[in-house]
Length: 306
Image (tube, rainbow, N blue to C red; front, side):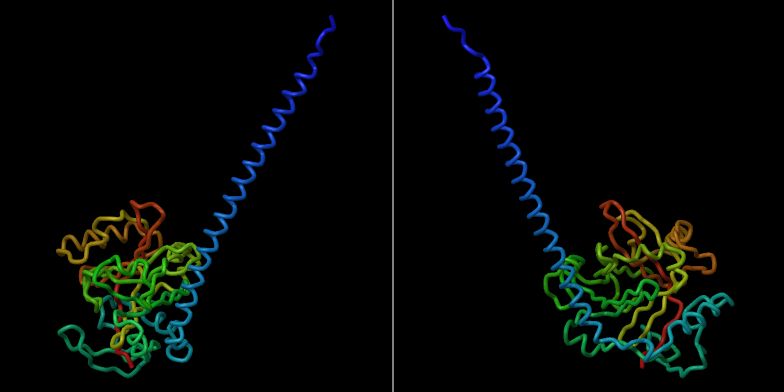
């Protein structure tokens, strides 16, 4: 009787294994392709959102006048810094900047004499686009320049543009519980930490000493008054707590200011704060839901808008 050759069986099994391997390879390739296509789709979506935001806010920039055509902010910041170092610390102490024209205006319930400054923002036109506008924020050290709105809650402008259309980047907005004239002890302005550096995505750059040294101030322009703030703190904070308190007792406010000064990641050795100060807190997310990054400035000078 002839013997059976076992090599045929092994060959058949090898072919089956090879076929199974080919199927697995194809499946893996299809999955990888699908992942690639999905990632590309998502990236394109992100690109479209960033492009939409860039286009809208670039268009809004046409409502501003280049500062070289209005005021020398470098000069104003230098003069205020010098005045602060010489002992002036509260709004109203610095009135004779550059010997410029002064004007008596109503601030709250008081009449205050302030230096006059040409306003670079066309608020009349911006109000026709969105009547919720309360100001325009400018941080020169990081080339940040955006309108600021205030809604009826803190949700609407998270993903609504200044033109009130859906936009993931949203808009910079003041806490709805704050007064719209920046008169509270602590006014909070929120903005998204966008990956391309837009909105408040570049705030963290102020940690860099070289960046911070370019300008230690931020400005809020409003229709009638222009506010100049000296930055005294930048740091990571808890997402809830005293940082987001608006009204304080004197003791609470002292604690609030002390904590901000002592934990600052930027040099604040040449600036002082007191319970007489008005503070604006710029707040953005960090990627950790339990923390936020904030930059805080105290009001050092107001100007009457011209």
